[in-house]
Image (tube, rainbow, N blue to C red; front, top):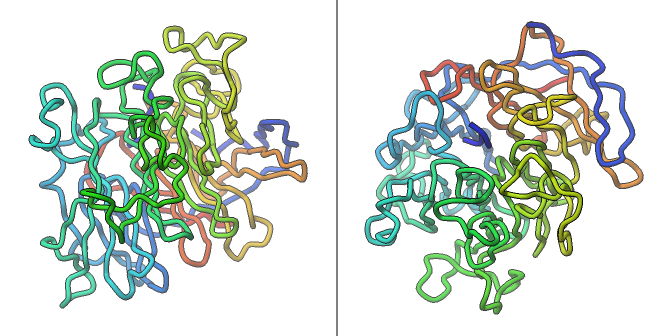
Length: 432
């Protein structure tokens, strides 16, 4: 999952203007249950031209929601490929799913998950690394469109991971047909420790894929790689940078999405102790971590809560939004771990173009999930507000992720526990 560190309706009229944006009237929403009895849902994707929704559970199963009901047999079950997860809390597991742009014709799809260490490829790290993060290709069974062919598995991409946390590992296809992969900085804290560049941190080390957004071509091959390196990737030909890199300077990009209108890539990037951030990420951009935290707060990995007045900010693309993290900035705080969402493109005209996202909780000790609406002003600056949920009493469940269907409607994926326990979790449709 995504954490960065280890009773009443949501307060009405709580408004936070960020990055210079103007305050807005609060949005009132309802949460309509779409599906219950699911286990820690971390993504839900609807392939183009398909009536089905595919839901990934953290423990390693992909389930199909069709006609408002879950099909009894999983579409894919890779639980045996995933290390045993800690029931109280874990950030590993089945973390992402994406369908090939030509899925309707070729039946290909991709999953991102935490795998057991590869004792050949990862021999040097196997004694002290946690796991490998893998992207794998599968094909639908020829005789049954509702089951995947497990024998079709083809490993596309694999990176040894130092710690259990900060995996990122959202995957998605852009309008260009290329696969984008979000990569956290490798875990622990402050982009420091085993498996981290001590001088720069992994986010700023262009020789590693950790702390980056990657862009690869699943329909091609470059050299002996099981994927292609697009020739227009920004660092192709740069011997000091990994050619897969699309953008750098990420800490833990937990849940990204492409705006189906503009094509912009939005990510919720979980920060350290003081701030949380939303970033729009473009080609070749440096998003700042670990030189800065939040929008543009200078960061010292040895004194993470201090934020010195001056630092080198050259070449950094600022986040579009930040809010106080309750860990170190309790005054006016909004949560402890941002959950990236989607730009709304559904039927409700007043919501068009608004970015709906959230936070896992305001506290690790109890459920207190948050849902936010963000709006881009005429001045180009973004502002955000806490949505008021009018049909639920008490605090919201933990907000794990968001989803968007082919009609542009947005959903909140929630859990009532801090870990992958049981099958009592719920996905809600967000409606006025």
